[in-house]
Amino acid sequence: MSEPALVYPIVLDAGQIAGLLPHRGEMSFLQSLTVFAHDHYKGTAHWAHDSAILRGHFPDLPLVPGVLLVEAVAQVGGAGMLAGDPYVQGMGSDFIGVLAGIRKCTFKRPVLPGEIATIEVRCRQMTERAAMVSGVVRVGEDEAASIEIFVVNSPRAILEGHIVALREASR
Image (cartoon, rainbow, N blue to C red; front, side, top):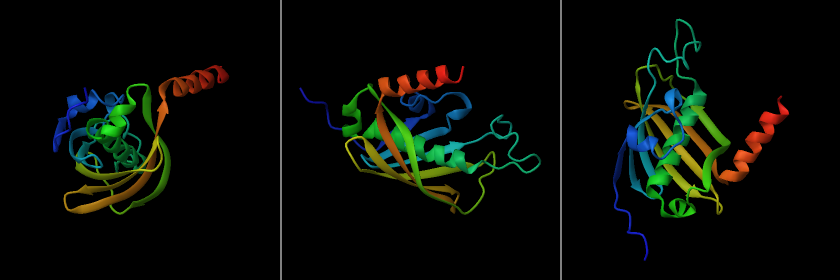
């Protein structure tokens, strides 16, 4: 028997997103996610004023680091694909999506702690296991960043093996 067809839009809250992504604590940025189609998603992210991850960037002039905006685009893309892309869902839990490359980033406006960032993402399957994720980060009507990344669905066992080998090599 085949799986039932997905019905869009799919709307997820932070708790439902946590059920899809492995990120926890302050590395879990997404507050909400809407999946409009198998390749089109929109999420919101927020970084608190007292976040330890922002404490040193920069003292007396706190800004959300650009790398966290890249990660937020990756989280929207990853959660969106897991929630709404039948192809990615068919891969099962033996695979985990990892950021594999940054094609381009343009930062046009700083994102401040406490601001709500809206991240709109489009995904395009490039190979059997790789997708290009193109995202625009906005604060209100202002475009804060335009980001293109590559996400690769890696076999979980291989990724775990690499992590174990790196830990052993660093001892």
